[in-house]
Length: 247
Image (cartoon, rainbow, N blue to C red; front, side, top):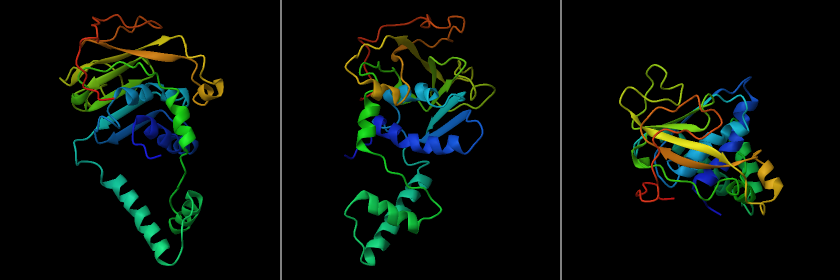
């Protein structure tokens, strides 16, 4: 199954993040850089994933995702894919065949000894999909977002910005950006897990105890005094708001 949506991307990120967290003493900050297709990286499901990475990485303090414009910032990942394709072509050219993915990986590991090649299983993607609520709300202005920030001091809020801002505390906290880049906040409030048909083993895979519902607030600062409750800052209904999020 060839998938490029947010669920598949999350499942592909897990082994990479596990490798990183296993090779450093404390994983506190994650920076992501990608282009901005709404079907892959810039959508409500990926925003939800950002807010839940701390499930698996307890020391995580902040997650920053910067979106580059189309055609920018893809040189390095595209080069990795090209290296793998060229290596596979060379292996086939000397008479080898790949009847299954395991054999392909073993050959590639020999050719590219300095890299790590890991298989992502379809079953893992399907299990991960069960952990993402199906009723996530869209964020009005998604297509204008170029930076999203989550921080542990306010874990139920994502700060959404028009352009990336690294001035003062803007790159460290999911707060209101006073430098003109603030679009709004994506607020997450806990709700009881109601899907009792979901196997417990599926949920424990990501240590998901509660699912969540995401709301949208106006362009105002979050009220940090309301710990454990939904943020009460000038909320508006989403029902009649046109969606910028195609998912």
